[in-house]
Image (cartoon, rainbow, N blue to C red):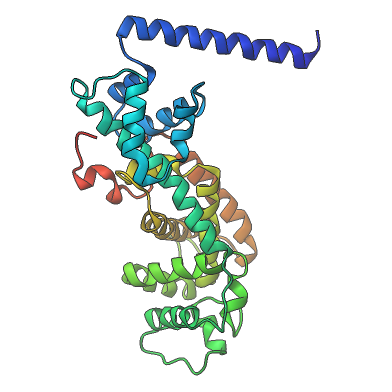
Amino acid sequence: MTFALSQFLVFVYCSLLWRGLKFILRKVTGRCELQRICYNNKHGARRSLKIESSLKFSKNELLRSALSVDSDRVEKTIDDIMALKKINPDTNPQLGVSLGASLLQIVGYRALLMQVEKLRREAYDCENQEHEEMLLKLWKELRPDTPLSGRISKQWCEIGFQGSDPKTDFRGMGLLGLHNLLYFAEHDKATALQMLSDSLQPKHKAGLQGGASGYSFAIVGINMTELTYSLLLSGALKTHLYNVAPELPGLTHFQQTFCHLMQEFQRFWVEEDPSDIMEFNRVRAKFQRRIVRQLQDPDAALCPHFSASDLRLVNL
């Protein structure tokens, strides 16, 4: 027997075993798998990830297609699922609410990924007035007391760009990098200004000679944009977003996550105490591994102060 055939037979055996177990559980509990998930798991990643998996691997086309509906069709989709499963909404009113909240998170994550990808693919265009205004606004937020001598200027290096024209630094992440940096500067200005100051005047670790090397604030911001994007793309960010977004995860949740990662990286950089900027890739890789480990916890919330529980949303 070939290895491929033996693997196939094991897969078939496990599939049949799992389906048999589900059948027995339904007979014993009187509830379908979706009901058991909703009733046995609190709202958030623990529930939504299991619902997502259940729908994804279902034999029924209606259930599988539920993962790709638009957000405005979620309510109708839940009604269809309840009818398919022969669940009376009058005697199980909370089930529809719980399923709806989780399905909104699931389809919202997909929509967020598409929105973020669109921004990432849009190149910075110096002929686009909106792009230029955003860039100049970033300067004013980070250097409010220092006029910019010109659009092309070495002054851009003061906020961490590599040369006299920042547009070249946005090539990898497109407009997404600029959107994130501007969001950080506008919505958490005090922290952004402090980080910029720290990047130019490296902090020393208590009791040690020397100190962590400085870094380029804007370039690190673009780098953390890439990290946040890669976590979203891989699905690793689902635990966090399903726990902090009560229903539809949106671009604001993504940008808040970016702001959090910026602050955490600053702390991590000081802890690692690199001798110079040449150690950036090593520190960044180690930081990413730490974040990925945190996100493997189904209760993970990188920014606890943005969590759904803080919004006092109950009975989901």
